[in-house]
Image (cartoon, rainbow, N blue to C red; front, side, top):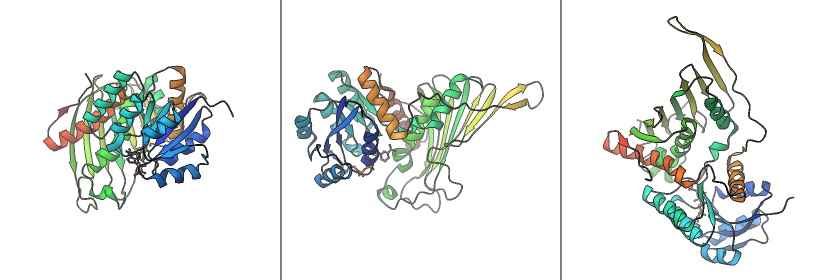
Length: 345
Ligand SMILES: NC(=O)c1ccc[n+]([C@@H]2O[C@H](COP(=O)([O-])OP(=O)(O)OC[C@H]3O[C@@H](n4cnc5c(N)ncnc54)[C@H](O)[C@@H]3O)[C@@H](O)[C@H]2O)c1
């Protein structure tokens, strides 16, 4: 095992902290030196489960950070706590990788970004779906422009998800709790900044949710690409994958991706007729050195960026745009008209 080079305190020892603590076991340069939760037994339980005998545990992040002087804070708390955890951690001299969403509101996200600028610390967001092999293959294929420059991107997300908990009572449940993953992936594939959105939200007949669990949103980007998102957590049958079902259209062809490992490509071989003559193409596999692996991949990439003094891909100044797509869609649905997507400027 290599030498540990970065020491981290993890805050929020609930369900998702398991993905982070499992990833930590695979990353030689990383050491968890503290675990925090407002419910101290949750921190103690994770300490035991992941065999972190030397980790300091506590209910207050400030105290655990003072005891351990870590390089990093990992924020796995609920969205409403992200601003407080992020601002305090950066003011105490730590770089932060936090769970999605960046914050519970755009105002909170602005405060996190302002604290980055004031303290000179780094804050980045967990967008684990960027680190799936299929997502990186789709990204590389679109960048290579074998289908020509991208003009149109569609994502479909349809699951009949019976959570039976707080989500059944939550407003904007699909857009707030889930769509950030798909919209962030869409923004990664379009490779441009979102400009505007027109969104319709509704609760379909027969829904087991109290509020709107279906949405359709049309985004425009500053490179001219139109990205449509159609989603529902209240659709029985023919479920898509959690990663959504995708179609990208370029000037010379199209590619579909099922969110897993299945791709199909057709490009124009000969034009001139009513329908062009088409040829199939493969989507190449990735080079060995591409960082993959969901949570583990994202944490590994963040650790490397901090060690090398580089900017993490999901730095919050950029990830703000994905959050702004979510809140723009909600505002558009509430006003029933297209809206401009907020920027940091
Ligand atoms: N990336 C993904 O795929 C993914 C999946 C699930 C959840 N998440 C995100 O992870 C975050 C946590 O979700 P979860 O499912 O683990 O929730 P959870 O409720 O299971 O766990 C949250 C934990 O944080 C603790 N907590 C809350 N406020 C705190 C504070 N101020 N200080 C210290 N501890 C605090 C709670 O006591 C709880 O133990 C959310 O932002 C959620 O959106 C991401």
